[in-house]
Amino acid sequence: MRRRKALILSAILGASLITLAIALNVGWILISWREFALVALGIILFGLIIAGLTLNTTFLIREIRRNELQDAFLNAVTHELKTPVASIKLYLETLKNRDIPEEKRKEFYEIMLADSNRLMTTIEQILQAARLREQKVESRKVELVDLIEECIKTTLLRHNLSDSAIKFSYSEKLFTEGNKEELQTAFLNLLDNAVKYSLPDPKIQIRIKNSGKRADILIKDNGIGINSSELKQIFKRFYRAMNVPENRKGTGLGLFIVKTIIEKHGGSVWAESRGNGKGSTFVVRLPKKL
Image (cartoon, rainbow, N blue to C red; front, side):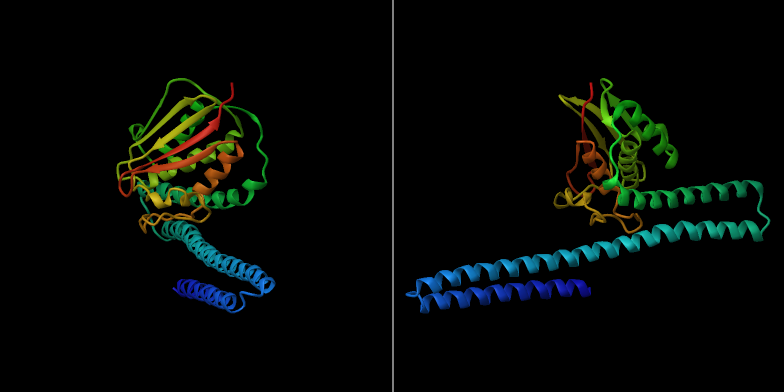
């Protein structure tokens, strides 16, 4: 709330200073129109003042927005780390202090394992976001169909879904060049999001198609959708869409990691959606390797 007030105040102050500068400059020109040299100098100085004020206001707004995103990221990370740790602690204390039947013990172990995986996923995302730009791509041939099938199996197991939840189609096997592990990370993030932000019964369709010198991988879900104004914003670091339910926590790093990996491999990624509640389609375009 304080930052929002500061943003509004900064915008009003910037607009007021720009208006005052214009009024002073116009008044000076009208009074001193015969002094051409002074008028020319005044116009130059006026331009510099306006440019400085505009840059200062823009920089201030960006800094406030960046701080808001970082605060949201810290809050999300705190929740993502604290929640599974608290859950694991609770179950361990229960196992220690009570006589639990064997079936219940197995159930507790499964829950703790799932919480541990959630914890590791969050930590991995943070580490990947920090090191991705510094790592060089290991160039080797990667078969995309096998890669996607491996990611599908991992996603089905991770979210305890039936095989029918994800449908995969392709007309031919296509290859790209790059780091298989990094590409797996990118597609796993996209599939995790497709499940995470889908309806209670996820229906995900994946298709690979040949686009000349490029291979397009389309991942379509039946989820909450994305507002048209946010289709580009969602790939920014720490950004989370406005329509994400409060109970769907995240770090705001997943799609940033996807974009960074795909661009490192000479490709591009974008999102398509008809709006809230109408699902989303993510398209990954990678250079094809013969």
